[in-house]
Length: 178
Image (cartoon, rainbow, N blue to C red; front, side, top):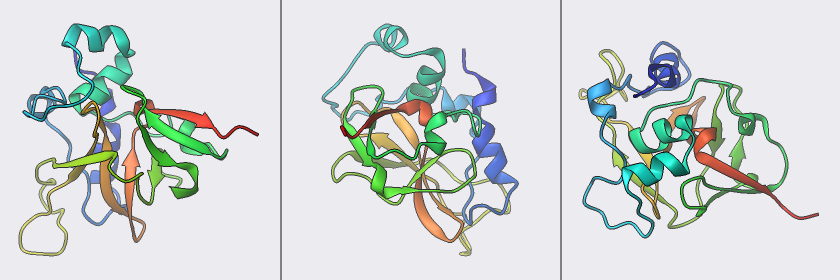
Protein backbone atom coordinates (compact mmCIF):
# COMPACT_ATOMS: atom_id res chain seq x y z
CA UNK A 1 0.00 0.00 0.00
CA UNK A 2 1.27 3.49 -0.86
CA UNK A 3 1.82 5.84 2.08
CA UNK A 4 -0.02 9.03 1.12
CA UNK A 5 1.88 10.98 3.82
CA UNK A 6 5.04 10.58 1.73
CA UNK A 7 3.62 13.17 -0.66
CA UNK A 8 4.45 15.89 1.89
CA UNK A 9 7.30 17.56 -0.01
CA UNK A 10 5.28 17.88 -3.19
CA UNK A 11 2.35 19.41 -1.34
CA UNK A 12 4.70 21.75 0.56
CA UNK A 13 6.49 22.98 -2.55
CA UNK A 14 3.23 23.37 -4.45
CA UNK A 15 2.04 26.00 -1.99
CA UNK A 16 5.34 27.73 -1.23
CA UNK A 17 7.59 30.20 -2.94
CA UNK A 18 10.57 27.90 -2.39
CA UNK A 19 10.81 26.88 -6.00
CA UNK A 20 10.09 28.60 -9.27
CA UNK A 21 8.88 25.51 -11.03
CA UNK A 22 7.32 23.59 -8.12
CA UNK A 23 6.91 19.87 -7.52
CA UNK A 24 3.63 18.36 -8.63
CA UNK A 25 1.44 16.55 -6.19
CA UNK A 26 1.60 13.09 -7.76
CA UNK A 27 -1.57 11.18 -8.16
CA UNK A 28 -1.61 7.74 -6.63
CA UNK A 29 -2.29 6.28 -10.08
CA UNK A 30 0.86 7.89 -11.52
CA UNK A 31 2.94 7.03 -8.47
CA UNK A 32 1.87 3.39 -8.54
CA UNK A 33 4.28 2.48 -11.33
CA UNK A 34 7.39 0.98 -9.74
CA UNK A 35 10.74 2.44 -10.71
CA UNK A 36 12.62 0.30 -13.17
CA UNK A 37 9.59 -0.64 -15.30
CA UNK A 38 10.64 1.69 -18.10
CA UNK A 39 12.41 -0.77 -20.42
CA UNK A 40 15.91 0.34 -19.40
CA UNK A 41 18.29 -2.50 -18.53
CA UNK A 42 19.62 -1.75 -15.06
CA UNK A 43 22.73 -3.44 -13.68
CA UNK A 44 20.97 -4.23 -10.39
CA UNK A 45 17.53 -5.78 -10.69
CA UNK A 46 15.24 -7.42 -8.17
CA UNK A 47 11.71 -8.74 -8.22
CA UNK A 48 9.08 -6.70 -6.42
CA UNK A 49 9.16 -9.23 -3.56
CA UNK A 50 12.95 -8.92 -3.34
CA UNK A 51 12.74 -5.10 -3.23
CA UNK A 52 10.11 -5.34 -0.46
CA UNK A 53 12.39 -7.63 1.55
CA UNK A 54 15.50 -5.53 0.87
CA UNK A 55 14.07 -2.06 1.67
CA UNK A 56 12.14 -0.69 4.64
CA UNK A 57 8.51 0.28 4.00
CA UNK A 58 9.38 3.98 3.66
CA UNK A 59 12.37 3.27 1.41
CA UNK A 60 10.24 1.01 -0.79
CA UNK A 61 7.49 3.63 -1.14
CA UNK A 62 9.94 6.39 -2.05
CA UNK A 63 12.44 4.46 -4.13
CA UNK A 64 10.18 2.08 -6.03
CA UNK A 65 6.99 4.19 -6.36
CA UNK A 66 8.47 7.68 -6.61
CA UNK A 67 6.73 9.17 -3.60
CA UNK A 68 8.30 11.70 -1.25
CA UNK A 69 9.24 11.54 2.41
CA UNK A 70 7.83 14.16 4.77
CA UNK A 71 10.05 17.22 5.34
CA UNK A 72 12.56 17.13 8.20
CA UNK A 73 12.23 13.35 8.67
CA UNK A 74 15.74 12.41 7.52
CA UNK A 75 18.77 13.15 9.67
CA UNK A 76 20.77 13.44 6.44
CA UNK A 77 19.17 16.84 5.78
CA UNK A 78 21.30 18.25 8.61
CA UNK A 79 24.34 15.98 8.23
CA UNK A 80 27.52 18.09 8.12
CA UNK A 81 30.27 15.45 8.14
CA UNK A 82 32.46 14.87 5.11
CA UNK A 83 31.64 11.75 3.18
CA UNK A 84 29.80 10.06 0.35
CA UNK A 85 26.07 9.58 -0.23
CA UNK A 86 25.15 6.38 -2.05
CA UNK A 87 21.95 4.69 -3.20
CA UNK A 88 20.17 2.58 -0.56
CA UNK A 89 19.07 0.21 -3.32
CA UNK A 90 22.48 -0.71 -4.76
CA UNK A 91 25.17 1.32 -2.95
CA UNK A 92 26.24 3.23 -6.07
CA UNK A 93 28.03 6.41 -5.00
CA UNK A 94 25.85 9.37 -6.02
CA UNK A 95 26.93 12.55 -4.22
CA UNK A 96 29.89 13.93 -2.27
CA UNK A 97 29.33 16.02 0.86
CA UNK A 98 31.29 18.94 -0.64
CA UNK A 99 28.43 19.36 -3.12
CA UNK A 100 25.77 19.53 -0.41
CA UNK A 101 23.70 22.72 -0.38
CA UNK A 102 22.27 23.81 2.96
CA UNK A 103 18.62 24.77 2.54
CA UNK A 104 16.46 24.56 5.66
CA UNK A 105 13.50 23.15 3.75
CA UNK A 106 13.59 19.59 5.03
CA UNK A 107 15.34 17.45 2.41
CA UNK A 108 18.88 16.80 1.25
CA UNK A 109 20.14 19.14 -1.49
CA UNK A 110 23.19 18.89 -3.73
CA UNK A 111 24.54 21.19 -6.45
CA UNK A 112 25.30 18.18 -8.68
CA UNK A 113 25.95 14.44 -8.66
CA UNK A 114 28.90 12.20 -9.36
CA UNK A 115 29.18 11.89 -13.16
CA UNK A 116 27.22 8.99 -14.68
CA UNK A 117 25.43 8.14 -11.43
CA UNK A 118 22.02 9.76 -11.99
CA UNK A 119 19.43 9.21 -14.70
CA UNK A 120 16.73 11.83 -15.15
CA UNK A 121 13.18 11.49 -16.37
CA UNK A 122 10.16 13.71 -16.89
CA UNK A 123 7.70 13.62 -13.98
CA UNK A 124 4.70 15.25 -15.63
CA UNK A 125 3.42 18.79 -15.39
CA UNK A 126 3.18 20.94 -12.25
CA UNK A 127 -0.21 21.91 -10.80
CA UNK A 128 -2.25 24.73 -12.34
CA UNK A 129 -0.62 28.12 -11.97
CA UNK A 130 2.91 26.75 -11.51
CA UNK A 131 5.21 27.25 -14.47
CA UNK A 132 8.72 28.17 -15.46
CA UNK A 133 7.55 31.53 -16.81
CA UNK A 134 6.86 30.28 -20.32
CA UNK A 135 3.44 29.77 -21.84
CA UNK A 136 3.59 26.02 -21.23
CA UNK A 137 3.92 24.62 -17.72
CA UNK A 138 7.35 23.25 -16.87
CA UNK A 139 7.78 19.53 -16.51
CA UNK A 140 9.48 18.24 -13.38
CA UNK A 141 12.74 16.36 -13.64
CA UNK A 142 13.02 13.21 -11.54
CA UNK A 143 16.40 11.88 -10.38
CA UNK A 144 16.92 8.09 -10.46
CA UNK A 145 19.86 5.86 -9.63
CA UNK A 146 21.61 4.83 -12.84
CA UNK A 147 22.45 1.36 -11.52
CA UNK A 148 19.11 0.17 -10.06
CA UNK A 149 16.55 2.72 -11.29
CA UNK A 150 15.43 3.73 -7.81
CA UNK A 151 13.68 7.10 -7.49
CA UNK A 152 15.84 9.49 -5.46
CA UNK A 153 14.12 12.87 -5.76
CA UNK A 154 13.96 15.76 -8.22
CA UNK A 155 16.08 18.44 -9.82
CA UNK A 156 14.44 21.73 -8.81
CA UNK A 157 15.01 25.46 -8.78
CA UNK A 158 15.01 26.38 -5.07
CA UNK A 159 16.05 29.66 -3.54
CA UNK A 160 17.56 30.93 -6.78
CA UNK A 161 19.66 27.86 -7.51
CA UNK A 162 19.23 24.65 -9.48
CA UNK A 163 19.70 21.74 -7.06
CA UNK A 164 19.09 18.02 -6.67
CA UNK A 165 16.39 17.72 -3.98
CA UNK A 166 16.85 14.17 -2.68
CA UNK A 167 14.90 12.02 -0.24
CA UNK A 168 17.18 11.11 2.67
CA UNK A 169 15.51 7.71 2.92
CA UNK A 170 16.91 6.88 -0.54
CA UNK A 171 20.48 7.63 0.56
CA UNK A 172 23.15 5.84 2.58
CA UNK A 173 25.81 8.15 4.07
CA UNK A 174 29.37 6.92 4.61
CA UNK A 175 31.63 9.38 6.47
CA UNK A 176 35.16 9.90 5.23
CA UNK A 177 37.63 7.93 7.36
CA UNK A 178 39.53 10.21 9.73
